[in-house]
Image: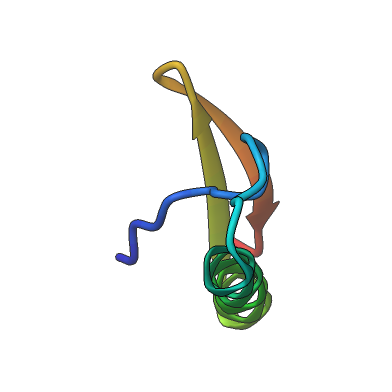
Length: 54
């Protein structure tokens, strides 16, 4: 189980390093979801099933 924050849906960072961090976090989340059997996006305690290979 991997739990990660979704940073790209909020305000954009003011600094270049903040924007790079947000991009890296997004790319990492995409890579992990691509390799995973299941990907669930939680919004306000409700699961949105993005991927379920079972």
